[in-house]
Length: 327
Image (cartoon, rainbow, N blue to C red; front, side):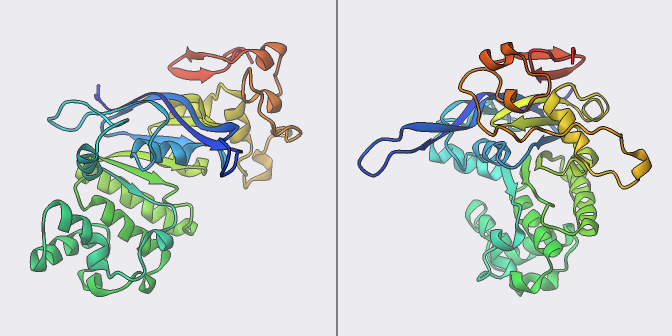
């Protein structure tokens, strides 16, 4: 059984709201609220949810672009003891950022339009390995070929490429330091469907070639089903269900997961169910106590409104619901 490359425990990320220049903030938004899970070495771990669920914030906490409010993130790199990333100093983070890289959602905004491909992909190699001149050109040219681009593109600017090609540049930049973990934050959502498929196939090929571990953040359930091994479903900063891909799509156990899956468009009208489990939009407020999904859940009870649920293990799935397995 594969060992854990990442172990996240009770991770929190709170953002203050309210207040002013002369007064303290009066409240906080719990963008990530006591999240715990493990990522196995070599797997593709999916994180899905609506916009505002906290999945991007979670990814940025893991890679330490954001400094978490609390909790623990431990990373086991090859041949090294576990490192605690929360509270890590700059020296350790510079090492971690070589072994954990990120591919962003919008390839156009994540690539500096004033830099040529040589500098875009190679700037991290200048710092981490002190490469320059022909050695740097050879290394960057090899990376371009590995992601399906030509060496002749070295001196071009990003605006000379299509959206799919720009995303390949982003992937090449992420692979430059030979990382162990790649966090893909909506990496294909800005691409056309045909280009999405090509990019996903490329990522799977690169995963086998470089023995990569992916954390794949997305809102498109069809994409997640195609590429991920295990999937965590987030709602308002919490993981409400975590399961293997097949189990999640064949037998979802949390009401929110079932509602997400029922909202996926089905092209064949004969295959559509006569009844659809639509989420209630009548109340967008989140209760201070109880289950965060209570205001939108079709199975809500008084217990849900007053008492926060704890995670239950059901047939290999982890479900954050009082009545998991019963409704």
